[in-house]
Length: 288
Length: 241
Image (cartoon, rainbow over all chains, first blue to last red; front, side, top):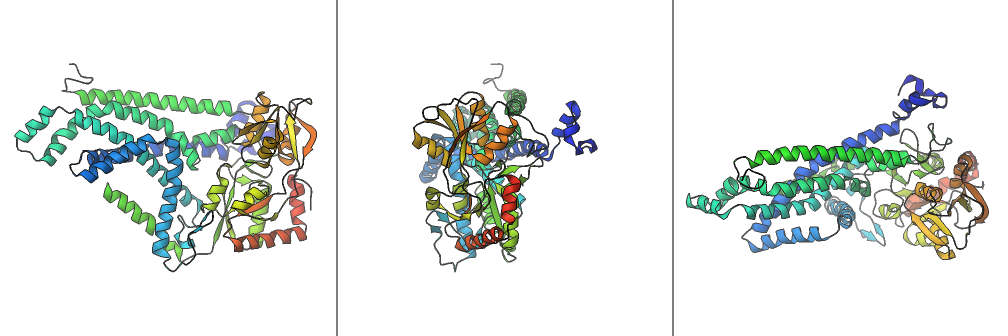
């Protein structure tokens, strides 16, 4: 990056470090921090939406819908995250490709499953084989977000389901007495008041979600853990301009600091939010 | 929410359909990127090494457009068969077990002997603790030999295990361990060699016979005109053909 970096062998001390920390590989490492933050920024509202949908379904008066909501909540919560992460990414990907295959290549006669192989026609590949690598990465990122949203949505659904039931009955009865329909009661009385009950559970989930981002690495996305491990690994002079020993400890220490700082920041913001939502409430963090 | 799910599903199905007409097949080459000198990431984060140079040349000869992707070693075969990429060039030895799941081209290196790397000469190879990377021929060899096997997901961790005393020695391909032994004065290569594996080949899906033949022909032509030997020598990955 700097002009004096052309011959790293002659450098030492801070100049060496400044060159080392600005290699192309390190730039990819720094970028991956934004990938993680972006993932959180998109996943959190998406998971909340899944959770809201799940909770609404579970409360539904239509029995099959309610079963479906409850099944979603308990099934996803009951299976280890990691199993779901590994399952969904393959299942979603193959599911999408299978659907596209049916639409795009109806004349295809070969079986899709050939022994171990999953073969769809070239045009049905997602993304296409000829697509540039960034499209593959965006697609991988998208399936990752969907997977996170499904898994964390189930937990959020459970939290919101409980929060909806925690709103005092008297409030709902009063709404009814005023002549509000069920729908009006739900949107005007229940939903605005449930957040304060949901917040402790949701903030907990947010923390868990932050800590779950290294699982991205399992989904084949080159996240901060991947790059920390790759950069920290021993480099021999034959294969790198910046040979060094096993520095993984230092890279992981940097990750530790990043995650700690980020969760601390989240705590502060969530505390403020709790105070704000408690205004005028005589319970759960209020003045009682 | 339902609308959102539906829209994304529709998008996913239709996206790229426009591109479909303009094909010209791109071959995606899967590799690990952590096994120098076969394949590793250079300072710019690009795939480099023996297999990068060889693969690019093979693609040029087979008149294919190729793109490199990295994937964890653990899941490198499952992701090939489910179609995330089309070939594996990751220092993968041709074995009967792997051949049941995927197909290999002819080998592009000679069988590389496996060697032990340890902190001292007097390691008990028959009864000691030996490190190896998961699902490698070396791991299978140690498991069968009676020594205690400790497995790691990456080659880097196998070396670290020896250095911090968790394992007495590590067993891996000679061409991988040689540069490490040369640069680290604490580690030494033991005299004993194990002749396992049948050379490294390119892995392709069993249903992809046409692609395998193209690469096979390209490898043959590189063997015949000596360019493959020049690459083998340059990167030090075993004996020339």
